[in-house]
Image (tube, rainbow, N blue to C red; front, side, top):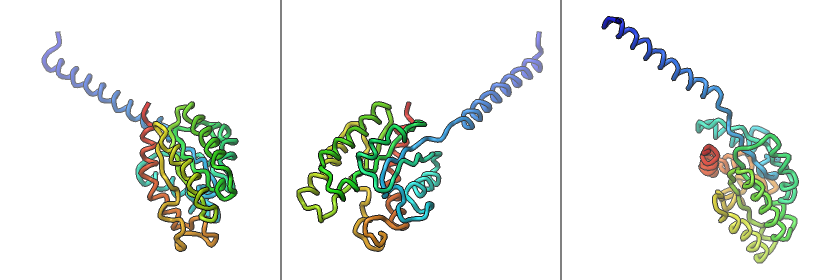
Length: 220
């Protein structure tokens, strides 16, 4: 039979062994956890048109997420000049390696070209349906038509995003350039694309929504 000292020593060794196993488990889990993959499917506004790469939306968003403690890899699905039709056409390619969440920023070029809002709605709906079928949570950002397109067109175009934004389970940001559009000091000379400071403000405003999106992606 074990003496009291022997039993105490055995219990101590068992506790130490159990503690070592627990520590090893958490160390392994932490080391093996992969970064979340966030697809940014967009146009020149998220592609960083006219800016140094470090000042573009994707780079600034990645920086802000790291500063907030998130381990995220941005999948670059933003192409300058792209329309909602273009985004739909390359969605499968953009998702080639998979994604945990998606930010959809499209529609500005549709409005500039005077595309029928019904076409924009159909394209965005198809994009959202495809992402939903893959169980990828989405943040949809809205866009406004330029004033020169007329009030009737502007209202119909804006309604596309307002209605899609009501889809169950969707996160919705009504206007990607909120607080930046039409502010000369925050835009490049073309009065369309944000400058570096404009991008910084867009990222700061939208960051809480992106964090909500990533939280949804983390839930099994």
